Image (cartoon, rainbow, N blue to C red; front, side, top):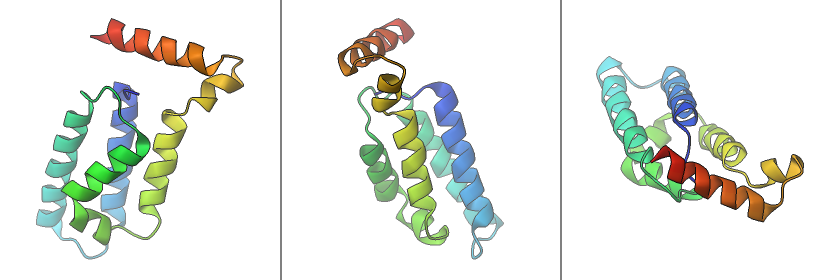
Length: 113
């Protein structure tokens, strides 16, 4: 599922909070992390069929030093956020079937292009 621009912005804010919680990074390292995060988030806007696990895996591959520097449990917070935003069961709770949700997502991605 494609993330909305507001979701990507919130994800960027979460990564910024992670930067603020880093204890061992100086200003230059934080600037380097911000640039890399911004580049990855911008690239993520174009992903059509992204999954939460795929997003986390890509970030871990591209920025392994970032995830080593943030406090324990940060990756789990990101995963919970992505699961919440990209969940099919979220629509099922609203009374929609999974097939309806998939059709709506596909139609929304076509309309956004």
